[in-house]
Image (tube, rainbow, N blue to C red):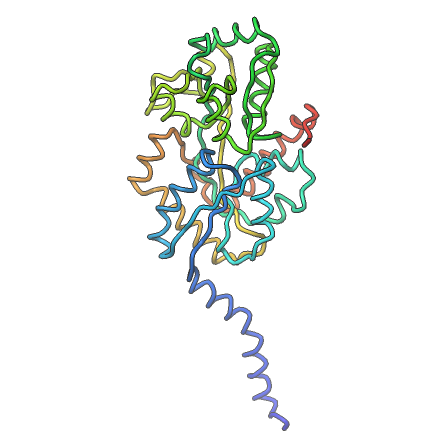
Length: 329
């Protein structure tokens, strides 16, 4: 059967509009099922704490259950790789951090590109790291701890969350700045390292203040300082590392939300808006403030801002990591 030219052109136009129509319908119905937030570290890491707060808060704006799944190992590369290879539909997201989206690209031979294989969604709150030690260590402040390390070279142990993790990098920087020597013990995450500090199996570790605070307040660990420029309003008794005696020892540990590459922009925008609405909720802000988190500055709330921030962090840290010769074992 031969169609008249006008009817043929209308049919062709309708067919050509189908991809755009299907995208619009998909975006309209998203989300229609459960969303998974993949945390590439063990429970207790900064990503994990934020993910669990977000998981609670996102149910209302998205209208669907949001679960947190911990996929730890190889300093976050296993969990990040899972999301990089996931379907780009918005249902599997990465609660990433400095490790997964900056350091790991300079340290590991990845089977994904940590920039090209992800779609930025939104920058999440950051928090300072805390230097904690076992409760019976013979030191009561940072200066005494440094003196003890110097008096016992190569005898102390510091836990890390793996090669290239923030605790690993901070431990190396701490050793350099204090002219001390100690052993490094790698764990699958900061949480397990802290548990061994509590148990007295290792001497100290760097961990996010949010994870450390409950243990500090219960007296199961000692704290020597936080890597912030100023004290926390929720815990003003804890000094900064600078105040405690180690100048310019500053490191804000940040998190961010990423989707697989190719996720539709309309879906990215819905996720971005839902996260921002959740973070602006007064009850959520109260929880974040209590745990020492700081919100991203104004103007840093878009996917484009996150992409620019990640690039700036890579440009800053890759030369440092490579100059230190840090490589995966």
